[in-house]
Length: 218
Image 1 (cartoon, one colour):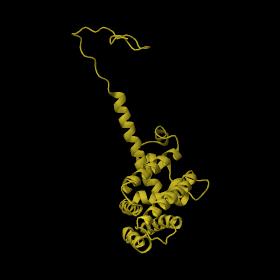
Image 2: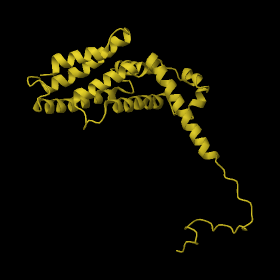
Image 3: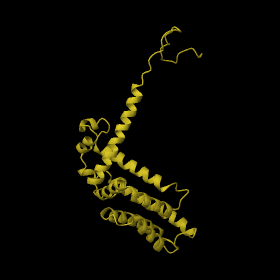
Image 4: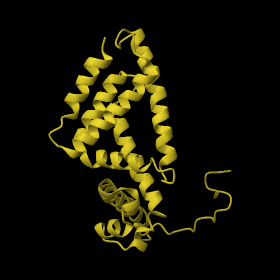
């Protein structure tokens, strides 16, 4: 096929005189897409605040819609239902925490955990969301129940592997049971978060450092 031939299924371009005025460039669709994405993110940001305060079941789509200047029906143009919106809120929260933790290849388990604790102490809304939703997810009927159960299992498995590697490197106490310690790390982090959410005077970073020093370090 020559460069002048149209692609299969396309109409051949019309011949336009050289002195004809240049056609007007229509940028509507691209601009509309950008605006749609911006509005979608605005909805997620406001939903985070609502879910972090009242949880999934009590979080009202009507309130979220009102906060972004939409009707509930208008909000449904961006998300099919409350569960889809909630899943996106949690997904973005998880992505931010993973970024804060850093690359596992470059940081030990303890370093990653310390980074997450410090990040959580600087983002009250996200931390509150996690605390409320993880408690709600103990209900087997909650939309996030399977995901949270799997999350804790997977985290425990990965943490145990890293703890064993740390023991071999002399960075973790040799007498620890890696499987038990992996579960305890999550329990301590979650417990400290809850106390901090109830009392701003609690220093999560200092408390977790104390746990690391007295329990994990040789």
